Image 1 (tube, one colour):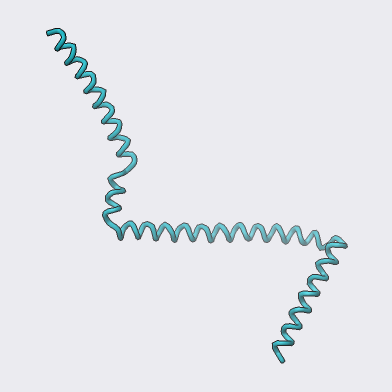
Image 2: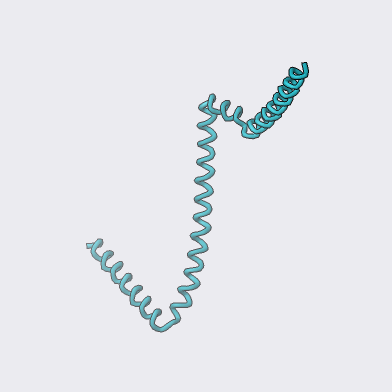
Length: 114
């Protein structure tokens, strides 16, 4: 009789631990929102809409970010180049480059007119 009581006590202890583990797993599954994910996959148009709106949001974010970063880079380069032009050697080189570009543009316009 004692052996059966001891076995029942062990079985109850094991069942209690198993129940606690299952409760923890249920809480973890609830936190992952698997039910919402499965529901979303069962409605393909809703999934497509969410993905489309997410793509638009990412695209707009990238465009705004690239614009801001480009503006900062252009401002910094403008500041650096404005200081470099005052240097004799670099300023002369940039002036020659500008003269070559202007010459090329005037020749290409003259050829278009003829």
